[in-house]
Amino acid sequence: IVPNFSIDNLIINYDQMKNNFGKGKLKKEFLLSESERYLKVEDGCAVVDFNAPTPVFSRAVVLAMKEMGIKKDFVKAHIDALIDLKTAKTSKKIHLLNGVVAVKDYNGIVFYKESEIEQIELPFSIGCHNVGKYNLIIEQVERSDDLKRKDKLYIDADKVQKKAKIRFRRNGDEFEKFGGGTKNLGDFLTDKKVPLRERDLIPVVAIGSEILVVCGIEISKKVKVEKNTQKI
Image (cartoon, rainbow, N blue to C red; front, side, top):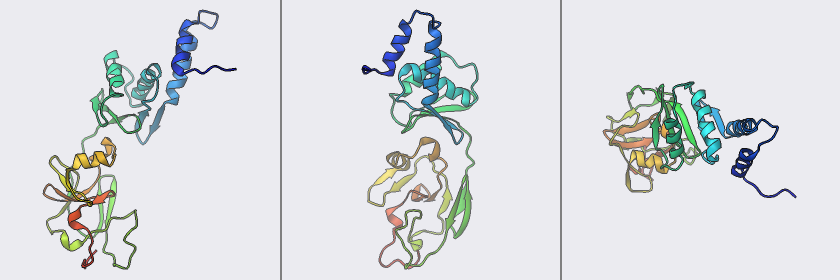
């Protein structure tokens, strides 16, 4: 019969071993193996599952920093700050070394390099627009088309003024949700669980600080398609 146990109990048992296995060597190898299991590297980011027990988490964040190019110069204070990040609010961010930041995301602590984003401002018009890492395609469609496709957003083009611009989000942006109610754009993106590292890269259509379209996510109530809409 195998008794119930947790990883933390295993770690305690390894601490208590005083035999021919080399004392702490077995524990070190076990923690390294477990930390690799809780670490995922993808799309230029390293993600540590914050469900990892603290001894495993501590080693996993060290591996994550090394994956992001921080091979040395990090200190215990960095690791302690990352442990505290586990219990912080979602989107809480700390700056590490070499331009690397760590942020509490919805599925773990995400490590990535923060780069300066080129500010783009393009006139709203039909065509294909290169906006950072996205290609934004704006086209006119017939009402007979399926307007419920989830891979597209549909707006009343006549409600979009000529001075509307395609750009990235800015401080002070506000968004009137399709279902009603106005929110700060940052709060809206939080509600939609958009990762913090992605928020500054999402194109929007705006007039001043008024957001009409959050591309790929939702349209404002002000540009919704209605029965008398002529141009979609």
